[in-house]
Amino acid sequence: MTATALHDTQQEWMRSLVANYEPELVAYAEQQLGDVDTAADVVQEVFVRLWRHRASCVAHGGQAIRWLLFRAVRNRVIDEMRGRKRAREARTHIATAHREPPSPIQMVDADLLGRATAVAIRALPERRRKVFTLAHLHGLSHAEVGETMGIAPQTVANHMSLALADLRSALRPFLLPAA
Image (cartoon, rainbow, N blue to C red):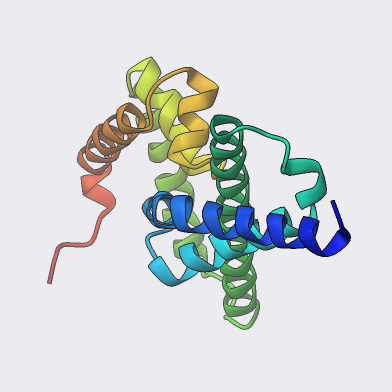
């Protein structure tokens, strides 16, 4: 096979992959990210990487490629979410770096809230507490928590909702009344 014929075959293979899998991959990424534009960018990056490494991928069968694509999109989504978290933390750090130091009363209030929160978290049922800790305190996605605990992402979401409701109830005395 000539170099031109090989290149044409690879281009056709890539067009076929994009046509067959792009909508499904974008929908999957959008579920995780909540933003169709970012999801489309993530999927496009995966296809670009795949194109760069096409020589080693053309031999794979359809099912293996599908798995590879979903895995690559999942990994890029995780990278995107970590990037968002770092950006949020940087914005928070910048915003708090220019504030006045807290007053003694604010420090006492923060300490009381911190202690009450720790008690409320410890009071959660074990599985709910593990889900909350992994997702909220360690920043894992629902999919990552599900993988870690061996449960479905929807089960993680359910436990997270219940944990937040329990914590809201336990911490109600510290919450500001709704306006």
